[in-house]
Length: 124
Figure 1 (tube, rainbow, N blue to C red):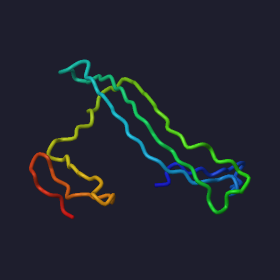
Figure 2: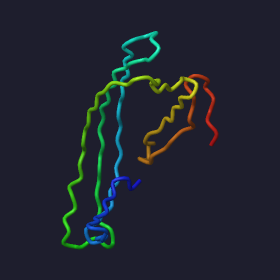
Figure 3: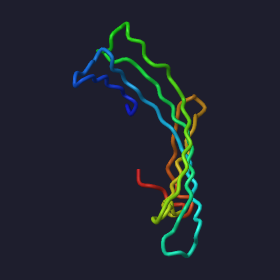
Figure 4: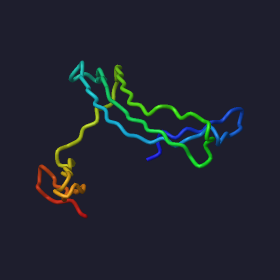
C-alpha cells in the first residue's frame, strides 16, 4: 500500500518535516517475440508499456508549510532484447477469475472466484 512513500534524507540526516506518504497502483503489458525459433540460444524482442497512479498525503510529522507534489498518473514504455531464458507463461489451469461489482445498494461485492478452465471454486 504505501509504495510511493518519500523520505527526505540529506547527508545521513532524516527530515521528517519534508517526508510524506504515497500510495498508488498501476498496470503493464509485456510482449515477447522470439526471433530465432529452434536455435540453441533463443533471442527475443521485448516490449513493455503501462501506467501508474500515485497519490500523496502528509504524515503527522510533515511540516504544515511543506507543499506535497501533485497526484499524478505516469506512463512508461520499455523495449529491449532478451538473450536466452524463457518468457513468462501463465497457464490456463492457473488462471482465476474474481468477478465483482456494485450491488443494488451501491455496496461493493465480490463473488466466489471461479477457474474458467475447470469451473472449480477457489477456497475461501
